[in-house]
Length: 358
Image (cartoon, rainbow, N blue to C red; front, side, top):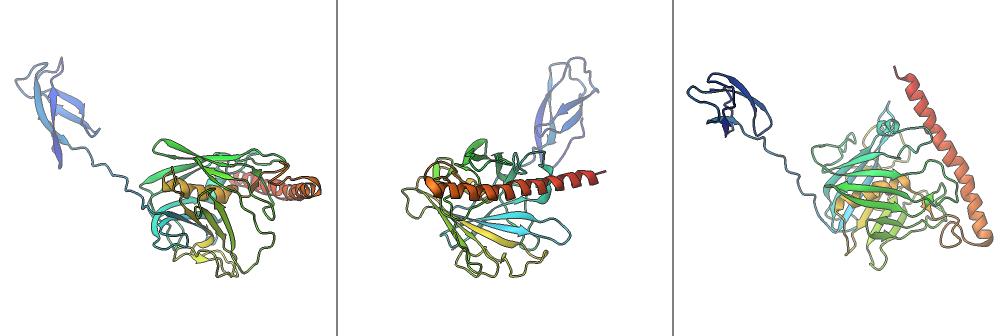
């Protein structure tokens, strides 16, 4: 008989094939996918059956359920270790209110420098086509790494992220979050802009929910957090709350969930992850997406912001008369500086990296 005993084991019925007399070794596939060799017992001919013990199927690791709550928190963290290029980490939580009461660890993602460089290309935004896994996990408070990668809950895809656009181009920036084979679209309804101040943002949609545009303050106080709110129309209190954490500031925004620290007055690479900004999503009553999608939406927003409805003749970066022209030229000046200088810098890093490759 075949030597296939294992613990735990299961019984398997084998039918003697044609041309296999007693004593012949026959290879089979066990229910768990492993190959097994058995010997045809004496006295059995083609078509007859016998039973053997085979290794049982390995137990499947079940995906745990994500913590639930009326609010999804996201801490956007800078991971800057000595001797390495900085990366970004995102820690997600379920909570009871927008200021973080009852925060429970839920999700973790990262956008490393290596991911960006591997996705580089000529005349291409480094985020175009990038995929960011969302794990049911946490971010290590000491090194900024994802602590457990066994359970991928969803995946964020950056589908349309223009590299260099004219200030009049309103091509929407878009992506999607794929969870269990279902795609949930994310869209910023405006083109990229290099000048966020004083200009109304375009709306953003998360599946069927529209987050209304907000206004970046014209003057930012250096020692106070900069707040944003993208409300859900018709649902008071619901929406995306966001605070850019200024160096040396102690509020009034939501602190990163401890033990993540705020940006110090004097930044030095190394040490624990540093909070760049915090998000709190008060879920709408008509919410039609899982919490992983809201977590990924904050990552999407942090990457593609700022974006504005530009040159539209009203309600956006355009407007009429002299004010619209002034905004256009201000955006164009910023466009020349950021949309050309920044891609050139990325392109230079790309060339240097590949030149140094063996």
